[in-house]
Image (cartoon, rainbow, N blue to C red; front, side):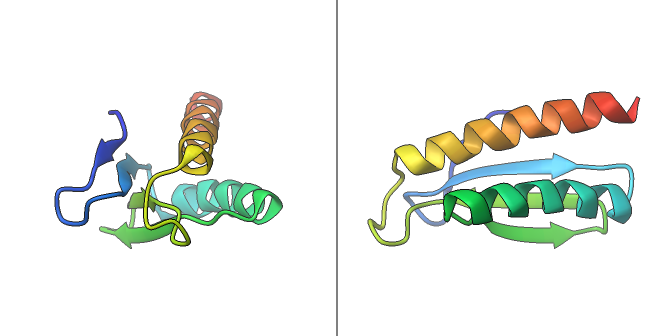
Length: 88
């Protein structure tokens, strides 16, 4: 699935991710958190059904989607692909 514009709140990139269980989700969230701290740009994260996570990206200071959001989305996509392939 691709990142999509939020239909509820404009100016956000939104994507949902699924995992085998909450432990795997937590491990992946830690990867995102460490990178977000490093680049000082943090996503909004919602966890539901114990194995699903929705990530929303926007630059709150600009109230818009910026290059920082696209860059973080690219990182998250690449990290997810690596994480999932490592789980096989």
